[in-house]
Amino acid sequence: MLGKHQVENAALALEVLRVYSHETGLAIGHEQMLRGLKAAFWPGRLEKINEDPLIILDGAHNEPAMNRLVETLKNDFEQQEIYVLFAALGDKAVDKMLGQLQVLPNVHLILTSFDYPRAASANQLTTNLTGNYDVEEVWQEGLVKTVNEMDSNSVLIITGSLYFISEVRHYFLDETNN
Image 1 (cartoon, rainbow, N blue to C red):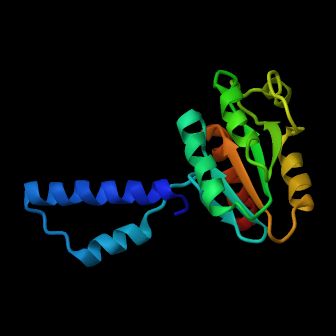
Image 2 (image 1 turned 30 degrees about the vertical axis):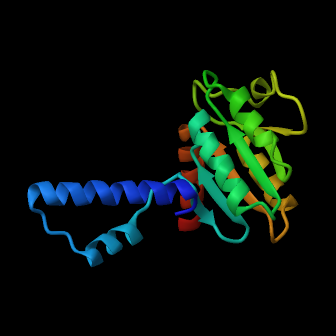
């Protein structure tokens, strides 16, 4: 799993398991813990959905989650051009979330929308936004356009609402299964 915070989460999970095992007498061996860590998977959380081009889904749907995503982008992708396809619900603090992304010098921001009653339109996302960004009202069109602009070293992060991430994830899974 990508992201420094995933290491922190894994360490916490192992400590909880250690305490639980001690308190209950449950015998968990080192090999079992390693197998569990290797099998750990959280759909839509820094999930690589495609390798070439590299496309990652992350449900950074609020400010703390966006902080973690931005931290990961700074640490793991600082030498790459990063394209961010972003959609959110209309009642979220999108100004602050997008502001975090816009301070990264290697980010190309694409604002879009998705099919959900509470989804903000791409134009609504631009209300208080300054700086450079693109607007693609239909996320599928934004996805195709962005992939065509990317080079072999670029990465595409699709982020924002968990509902959006779920819709995109289903799109990719359906595409790969057909």
